[in-house]
Image 1 (spheres, rainbow, N blue to C red):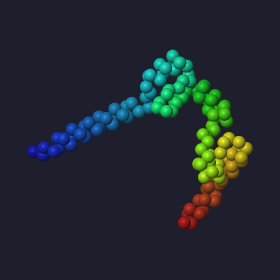
Image 2 (image 1 turned 90 degrees about the vertical axis):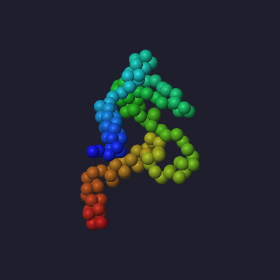
Image 3 (image 1 turned 45 degrees about the vertical axis):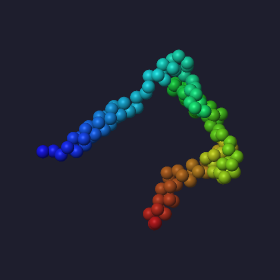
Length: 127
């Protein structure tokens, strides 16, 4: 004879299992509302959420054009003077300018797979 507590455990396990299956089945699917809004308002539109504005891009061509072709225009970060004085040596926070390109080129050279295998791997194996 099963103990009364096991029925509650079985029910909870069944509910959790059902939720996991539902989540996995719907994983990656998108809400149809955004497609309807894209048809109505165009491939670029914005939503006001709290104090912020969310910009939605719904077309591959628009995403490619804005984020790849015109990325130098849109990739700047907001200026926070206190943070910028603390992080001015970190090129991840630079604007897209010649100094950023030079620092990125140096970092890409030192972090390339060939360089990591040749230099860092030996140090890691020695440690």
